[in-house]
Image 1 (tube, rainbow, N blue to C red):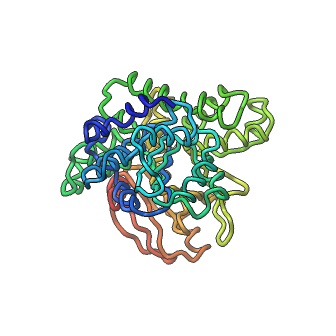
Image 2 (cartoon, rainbow, N blue to C red):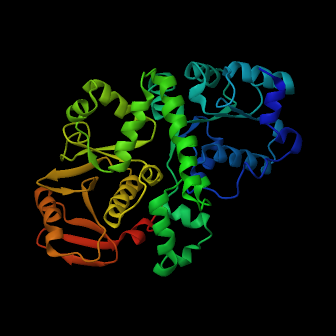
Image 3 (tube, one colour):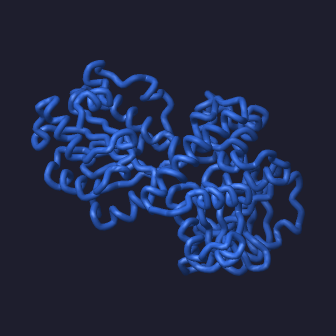
Length: 418
């Protein structure tokens, strides 16, 4: 492990502050919660898609520690995205540079893209157990490697924060729209339309040219995950097919996942299709919903629906967004906002069932009596007294024999809470 490289990563050892281009001033809604855990013993893990701000949050936390008069040399950052090394090699080089006793001094250690470090779980467990004064903050881009491997190795030692792309509320704050302005439709609607189409990758917000936007998402998000991250972890043979499946889901948000049909269509083994779909899900590129059944594990059996985890993926592959397709992008936005896991289909269909609560997306000018049919059926069947319908403009509340259905413009609903 080259000491000079470690010094480059940790420029605050000399400058006594983090470069403002790294510790950006804008803070995500989840930031205060992560910051609160800095002084807690367990490992803080930031997981999520590439390019949504995990590393930025690490730098912001480092700057916060410096502002609190923590000795700059007691803060160590290393990224496995750039250099192959073991945790032990990083720590040994650090100790040599600063002559630190990691058993007696409180040291804050930030390890970025840790899933790229071979055997990281066992190494981290060793240091966590033997050196109680070390505080680890780690990040990773694949949920499988943060969740599956840590169940046993790091059980009881790790707290996970899942970072999604920016929410609409964060997007407005980023664009310096003040909260008091959130109630004004004329102010919010232009931002809303752009956000629905382009999604929540912060570095793309300033892009005006479609070509630049799409090249960014393709090169820095999709290709890195599809051709580097997933093949390295799962040793799959055909990353091109993985990309085909991602494009299929992205251009057909809410599509039913029929493994048998996909197997015939692509002349691939059904088990391969299932595995590849799972790789996309575990890498945060798609989300899967299962058909709701009260009182049972709903999401793992029978019919499933697939959505991309951000509308930027739709915009990447869809050359033109027609008006009726815009409604499907709205639906995708709502699914991801809720981190939904269930829909309901029984003749008619409810887009989302969130903890037993039915939500329909009807992005249209007028809601008519026929639009309530399936929701009333669901409410009667499951004895649910409330439902929500997200619309383009309408806002009212209707009482039926089955219960109350609230009708709310989707842009307002997206801003109701964090």
